[in-house]
Length: 320
Image (cartoon, rainbow, N blue to C red; front, top):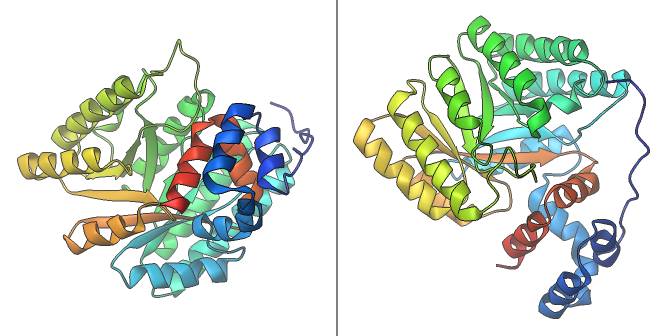
């Protein structure tokens, strides 16, 4: 990996240009406009505000405090990823250190989450390790939990290695995400079972190659259920159920009743928030994943480029 900066992707200014840049087929574009009309072009900033808690740490903490009133905790994530310049990675690492201090000084119940490519993995492995160590050390000192997000399959090994190292060093003050759509995860989960810290299971948002990933939804669902069952049986520090799927959340309830393993449910800001509150009222720990920052358009753009279904998922969440 070199330290060169990628050419910035064009920034879409309307839904139509967004769909075009994201290479969404015209028939799909037509379907979207028939369903919601071209007026949605005027809704882009409100749509962003459904999924992104403002552009500053202060607005994110305000949203977090409001979310806490419904007994829902938060996972704060500064938007930014795939940096290839060390100064960009260092700057966001500095921001996370400050965020951890601000969170510790507040009454907010929450933690932080970082992306490896945001804090240096696109520059070098050393840059990533140095910045992650700095964030984890400062956050742990402040009493703030740190999640390490998982990105595409090319980053899996280095991410799991970093989690293992910090999980042991901090006695479990870090968490990591694993993805059910990757075939390798059935082996990875066995490695993680004996480690301190938390593990979040998601279905997987990246469009991975067919030779290493399950492509059919039914197969991904099957893998998710199998992995969830294994985790509830073997994980002592609890299970983080990263899903909006009511069937998977209900299955987690059944597994908890069977094994007694503590668990939490994690969902995105702007998606099924009524359900988040309902689950919290049942006495289950619920965390809302809350992105914030000025890079909200890049956030949506990259999610759609990674997997076209993500656009329809976002639109469905807003319109329903």
